[in-house]
Length: 113
Length: 114
Image (cartoon, rainbow over all chains, first blue to last red; front, side, top):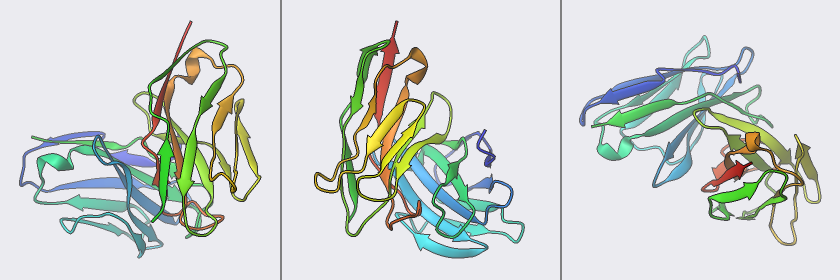
């Protein structure tokens, strides 16, 4: 158990819908990262927040957005969902803004039908 | 941009066999290098890391050496067990000494049989 908690574990939704994935980082960690793991794209970095502020952006679509709240939990919002958004979404956390070791949660499986 | 190339799987080995999973990378600057493992139905776990050239990362019998001259970070284990069956990902960071903004390889599935 890495200490990073993600909910929900599984989610099935229809095209065009919007979903929110939630992540609670390890106790004491200020950084939260989001990654997407899909069959065709592999594992891709989406976005990094540190203590509530966006630090780095990767291959995140405009239909997707994220935020980190004062209690340090983070949410990834996915809207206007398409079939190709079906993937495993990982959250990870680290202590600093450039953590040398990041810890991954078990992921949220999103299936778009 | 940064990229990581891993040998394609699946790799099937008998228990106690020697394992090598090749990983080469392309990066600007001096990234840190990582191996992550994903067991069935679980998230990614850090297996080992190396933060500068010639560093050797090791954990649970696995080893990998950061070779700048060949831009490689091959994973090795002398004697695999059935419990090592998993998907292994090579990754690099965008800056030395950090694990920020990781670029992952496509993963190599390892299956170990009795």
